[in-house]
Length: 130
Image 1 (tube, rainbow, N blue to C red):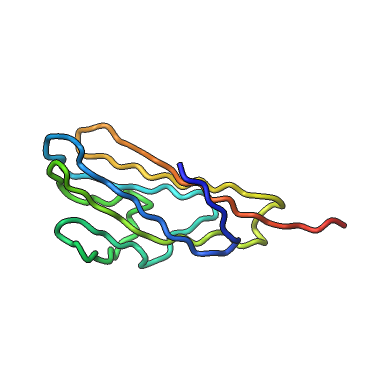
Image 2 (cartoon, rainbow, N blue to C red; image 1 turned 90 degrees about the horizontal axis):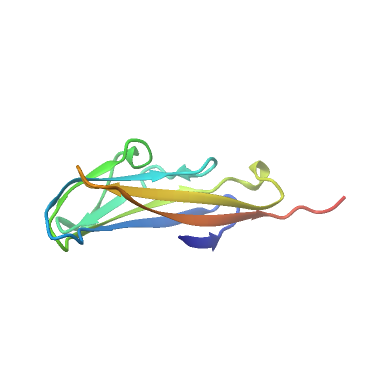
């Protein structure tokens, strides 16, 4: 879990990493990201990197935050990265104080257990007293 602080309305960048640390080929690896209420995936910001795309490729789908994105099959020690940007809620939609937003990522090869991790961003709203 990673904790960060960001300003209301900011656009922030995330990276989800996967590596086949087993000694077998892992098939149909699916990556899915869950965004908390108020956090939005920036359209056309999702890039995918793996041994076939070392310079990356833009994903023209927003499936990352809905059904997930199948990143393919991976031999032992192969890896992949998905990078994307999210927009944080604007100040007028936040309560006074810090709002904690918890983004989580789940990675699951076909027929195997899923693994997950999360990143927390605190978005402060400073309110004056009357």
